[in-house]
Amino acid sequence: MTTPERTAAPATPVRILEGQAASDRAARALVQYFAELDERFAGGFDPALTEQVDPADVTPPRGDFLLLTELGSGRVLGCGGVRLLPGGEVELRRMWLVPDARGQGLGRFLLRTLENRARALGGRRVVLSVNEALTEAVSLYESAGYRPAEPFEDNPYVQVFLGKELG
Image (cartoon, rainbow, N blue to C red; front, top):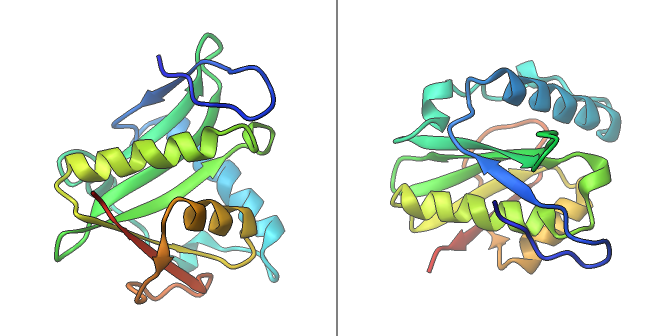
């Protein structure tokens, strides 16, 4: 059990579940995530227009897909994945929190956990891509030390590419 730092409300104990790429719970979390993107992006969001990642690419030893769950209830509060890219970089993918879990330090906690998984995979640098409409995500990444990076994928929904050296 790990409890992240919270800024306002009392801490909610959470648990990270690793190796969840092929789980039904991960699939349901991604459906929720994609539905939110569809609402927030001008013109909507169609996941078929983005790269479809083989679950093996986000499963150890080539990557990992994590679920952040509430201890006790088991409710999925968020998710995120990492996968090795050619050249030793690790891509952070599909990091998301349910709306009512935001603003409580859980995003920063999940991000640090994903960075630790990237290190465990042998990564020396993490890269990510994000839509500019997700301003709170861009702010989180920038506050965690992510800086502009070269584009590494062709995705019609992405305008922002960021990277961070892992110490």
